[in-house]
Every structure is written in structure tokens, then in C-alpha cells.
Length: 544
Image 1: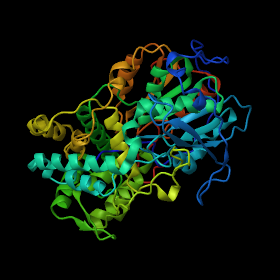
Image 2 (image 1 turned 45 degrees about the vertical axis):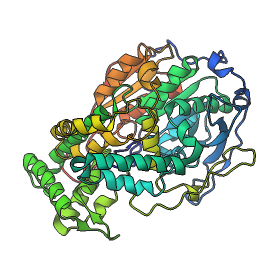
Image 3 (image 1 turned 90 degrees about the horizontal axis):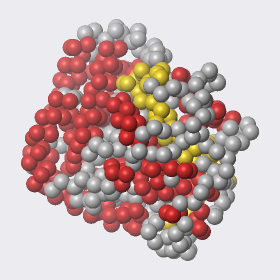
Image 4 (image 1 turned 120 degrees about the vertical axis):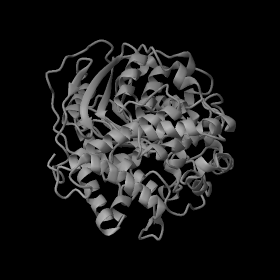
């Protein structure tokens, strides 16, 4: 599935943290008393979920840090019928080392990313927060160990249908294949699929908050995690504690417009990378930025016409190159590695370096899924790590995005607008336009999604929340930060990060400090304040 994943960057940097002399906005900061109950939480059957406590133990697995603890909460499969089936949601935490003031819940984005695995791999980035909090994350329903969705063999069918020029040449046939694939996804995913999406995941977070024993939800969400945080705030406004949304997602734009924004953002990020690269004598694309841009376009077209073989025997196409470059542009720290990987391809015809950046598709055989464990009471238990289907990440991305999107254009509407859309996408980015165009097709054949995100997440009455937007973000353009802030209303405080890459917490020392100061001490920067650009990645490649 050729849809870019909006996830927490895979490369992190150490950041110096400390208390700065920032403006303290005391309005709406979390209190210590218990929140009042709302009508949506006092219905019959929900008390048993809100009264549970988490049994923490060492995480199982060879690559799990010894000080990382794992647990779970049980949630209703269908909140409209809480007396029915249930499922377990996987949790992980690092314990607070300082004076504990509760928990901070993390979501790393995606949608479809496993929070447990992300925290295990990159937990050191959040260790300063353990001065005051248990740092907790989770696998949302349908993701990782929490009743993972899968499309089974249909994952490869989706890739084949959207990964060639057939979508343009034979759109009706492609749509028929996608509709059939959607039916297979429903069959292989089982009963969780109709109840996947951000609205239900946000209600799961309220169960987590209560199980953790916190009076308010303190939260740090990246990319898609900002959508999740905003939906929680709309559902439970009086439960919002210190909330940070970094790499702010749109709440209103349809998928076609999101794809266009992604194409423009990635083209801007590519242009910035090339401006950096050509200042280095080792840049494989030359010393002139305009010629380098033309060379990238020629390279994509050449590989689409004549792919090069890979070590796995599969061809490496121009669209594979586009996907790999798009992933590498998520973090400025990856620029030197991207420069070297491009040199391998241009000089030796070796795509292996670029293949290391790819993470959004299924490039290996899809095995038959192992069904989520039955706890013996009719509820779904956690799935063993080794049994999580290999296509879970792209399958969950499609399922969650489609569950959040109410638009379902007909086949006639799609085919009638495809030529116009293709022209708009190619104008937005001659490199990434075709790759992102498939986002328009991703929900065809699936049930209509909810109107809640688009219609009801607005004009909030909550504690102050910090929204971080990065000017050079290739996935969530800065304008989404300001638009979402305006939509959320008076609680939103915007921090303008003049940097590169997707999200600011991992790439900017300034953002890192200000986020930590807010979460730990309640210290907010003034609305509209900014962080300056960081130096290019380690200056290993271009002179920067």
C-alpha cells in the first residue's frame, strides 16, 4: 500500500533538558481532584472497565529493555454494547525515578505503529520525563499485540493494484480489485475491524487513564497521535491534563487533499535535502541544485522503465526509490545516510542502502494470520509478539484512516476525477505525486467512516495544550498546526519550529526542552513563539 506512514522518526538524538524562564500560563492547568463524571461514562456496563487496575511485569522478548514493564487493560469491543465481547490492549511503561506525579501517555503515530515496540527501541529519548512521570505507551486496538488487523493474502493484491500504472490506465479494474481486497481484509481481521478507529481508541485511553489512577490525562502524541489526542480532548474535555501535540494532523481535510499536502511537503523536504547535498563534493547528484532535481526525476523514470535487481531477487523500481527517499526525509539526521545510499545506487547500481529506509509496505510473503488469543471468557487476549501478522502496520493504517474518513466517492466519481487529480498531484510534486495519488483509492470498498473527527472536534473547553508545528515537515505541513489550533480554539498554544523533518521533539533541542518543561512543570511558551533551525545532521555529508 503506497501511503506514507506518518510516524515518529526512527532516528533519535540526545537532547539537553532543563527549566527555561518561560511564561507560565496557569489557566486551565490540571488540578489534583477527581474529575466529574460525564453521561457518556456512566452508562450500564462500563464500571467494570473503569475499576480495573494494571498488573505490571517485566516485558517478554529478547530485545526488550530489562527496566521496561508491560501490562494490559481490557476494553469493550463495542462501546455501544459494553456487556458484550472485549479485547485486551497492550501497555508498556518506564517507572518514574523522581517524585511521581502520575503518568504521561505516549502515542508515536502511524496510524498503525506499535507503541510498545517504539518505546522499547527509543525510550531513552523520554527518560527526562521519568523525573516526574511513569512514561506509558500502548498498542491501539487493531495494532501490534492488541487484536491486530490483517488483510492476509490481500495485502499483496493491494500493492499490485496500486503499485503500477494500472490505476491510471484501467481505474475501474483496479477499483474492483480493491473492493475484493477490502472484503478479504474484513474476513482476516475478524470482529475488531468494525470497531477500529480513533473514536474508539480515544475511549480506550480513558480506560487507561482510570486504570493508571490518574486524575487527568497527561499526553504526548506525534503525527497521527495528535489526531488521537484531539479526539480524546473533545470526548473528555474535563479530563485533559498537560497535552502536547507534535506534528499536528489535519482534522478536516479529505484523503485526496491530505495526499496533495503530503506530496507538496515531501517535495519541499527533497528540495531542502538537495540544496544541502550539492554543497558536498561527494553528492552523487552533482553540484547544482536544479540539475540535481532533474537527475532525481530522471532516475525515478529510468528505474520504473528498467528496475534493478535486489539481493532478495525482487526488482527495485522508481516508485520503490520514491518510497525510500520519502521515508529518509522524515528526519534531517538521515540526510548523510540518504546521500550515501543514493551514491550506492547511482555509482554501483546497488539499491540496498535505499531499501533500508523502506518501512511502509509489505516486501515479504504474507503468512496466514494467527488469531488473537481467547482468554476463555469470550474476550480477545493479547496476541503473542511472534504471531502479529507481517502486514499489520499497513493494514491498520488503512483501517484506521478509513474509519476516520466519512467520504466514499463512487467508482464513477473516482474515474471521472482521476485525470484532474493526477495533474494536481504531479504539479504538487513531480517526484512524489504519482506515489501519493494512491491515497485517493485506499478506502474504496470499505464502509463509510465516522463524521465525528471532522464535525465535532472543535471549540474545545479544556486545559491549555501545546501544539508543535515544524516548518520543514514533509508529512504534516505547518499550516495544519495553525488550522487545527484555530479549530480547537482558546486552549491551543502554538510553538513554531523552524526546522526540518517530521515532528520537532526528536530533532530540536529547543522543542524538546519546551515540551518537557510543560509536561513536567506546567510551563508553557507564549502562543506563537518559535524555535530556531538546528544545524544539519552531524555535518557528516554536505557542509550544511
